[in-house]
Image 1 (cartoon, rainbow, N blue to C red):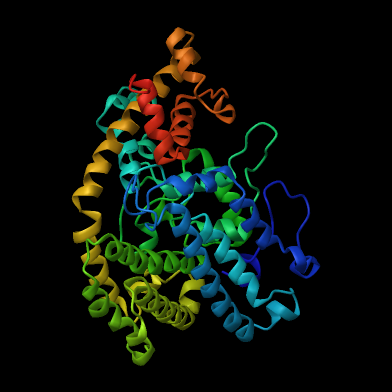
Image 2 (spheres, one colour; image 1 turned 180 degrees about the horizontal axis):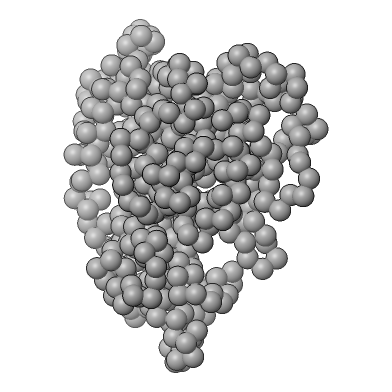
Length: 447
């Protein structure tokens, strides 16, 4: 893969080439991507979506929105630091094409900002709840009418693939969704493969899948423009990662490792002394002990350690990326950056403690159980009404239910696959609170 191709400014529907040296630096195309994402309704919905604790009433606990903003900030730093070295190593990128180090930062920041945009309500259990509705719930009735890849998209519903669709799907009068640059879309796709064949390998990009069948043709266009390397283990349409996707992934890994841990301490499910024991291993080379000892509140102590820890992990990820640039460009780097750094063991220790004390805590489990019931009920109600209307069998109740759909979801889909996925998209865009309200309305519990 070549950097000048990977940094493409092309947008869906373009008929002429966008050149970096002709860009207006006061409103660079990659920065426009960031603006379009942050003003989108899908991004705003993240303010009431679970990061760690579903439906938490605690104001300092992170939501998907605050998490995404923080991942974006870390991603921007990673991109700029890498971009500075890449431009120095390949000066033709600046001299012939006009690229700057900040272009790398802007691409990674935009992709990182949107990395969770496709996640359903109630955290990762929301993805599983959608999949299980089709795999083991009432959605099984649709199996025989779908081809294998379409069915796999549903039973293994994936937030990353859903995010790509939300960013790019056309609707009447809105071609190409947000019309982001292909460089940002490439960096967004951590798993550029289909849902089938499902053959997990040691390659980190095979861990999940990254696009639905309905988006396959456009993914091919993006990959061709960017020069992404075909990888047939990912299906008929599968590719090696865009190099900047590694930085997006690293930004997410760094933030959820450190900040979820911080949330657990603030919630009291992890004792503060663990912060010193675990975080000190990440910051022992940079901590100012005298300054730390002057901090009198838990919040200030945690904030200081968190900032130093994130800085250490950013520098480490940059070092790993630059050491392996050639392998990454050749599509021959099967690891995440944080799995190959000098702090991998320390990060794993923190994650394991978070799993035990936070992700598997009773509060989280109870809210996830509630989420399963809510999502299954919403899917069943809306899928039934939507299909009944299409088949000409819609009753008055079905018509009333469909009036609850937002205006942009009131559209006809000709195939069963498209109709089912359409309702999945709708449910995925709901906030935790809105999902609860809709459930209460449908079940007659609303006041």
